Image (cartoon, rainbow, N blue to C red; front, side, top):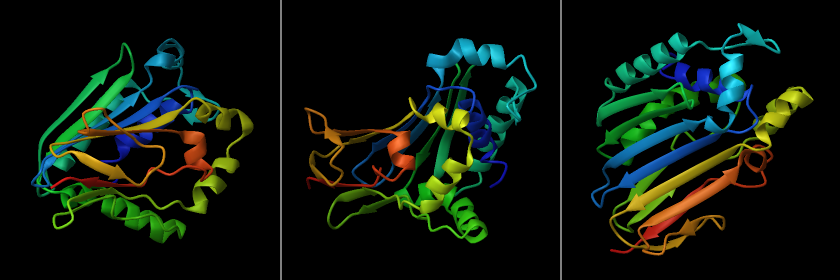
Amino acid sequence: MKRFFNIFFLLFSFTLFSSCFEILEEINFNADGSGKMLVTFNLSKSKSKIASIMLLDSVNGYKVPSKEDISIALKEAKNHLKTIDGISNINTTKDFDNYIFTISCDFSSTGNLDAVFKDLISKHNKKSKTNFNTTNFSFNNSTNSFKRLFSYDASIKRNFYKLNSEDRKIFEDANYTSIYRFENDVKQVSNASAKVSPNKKAVFLKVDLMSLILGKKNIANTIQLSK
C-alpha cells in the first residue's frame, strides 16, 4: 500500500509549492453498483511557478519531486491496483505542461473502492491514534442510496497548525470537488453544499480545503436515488 500512495504524497508535495490546486473526484455509478472512478490532481493554475520550482532540489525544506519520481509512482499505483479484486481498466495520465495528473479505474462494487484505501487508513488510525472512516463509499441496494462517508478528525486541524504560516497559506485557494453521476434520478442529498444537476443525473460538491481542514464543512453525503 505504501508504494501505491507514493503518487498522492508526491503530488501533495507539489501543493506545498502552489497556492492554487484542485483535487477532483469523479464517479460514474451504474444501477447495479458498479462504475468508474477518476481522480484528478490539477495544479494547472500554478504551472509557471511549478515549472520553475521543478528546476530546484528542495524548497523550504521540502524535496521537490522530479518528473521521474511522479512517473514511477504512477506506474506503481497502476500495478498495485491490478492486484485488487474487482478493480479493472486501470489508467493513469500525466501532463507536465499543465501539471495535471489522473488515475482511473472501473470497479465491480463500491466495496472494491474501499479495498484500495482501507488498509492505509487502518494503519494510519493505529499509528496516529486517529479515527478516520475505513469505509469511504457504500451503496444500499434495498433503499437505492449511495453514500460518500467522511469522519472529521481533530488531528487534521492539529497537523495543519504545525505548519508554518507560509505553508498554511497554500490551502487558501485550494479546493476539493466531487462529481457523482448516476443512471437513476437523484431524489435528494444530505449535504447542504451539494448541488443536483438540472437533469437530476448528477451531484456536484465543491469544498474549499480550508473549511474542510478546520472542520467547518464536510464531504460526507447521502444521495437518495429513484428506483
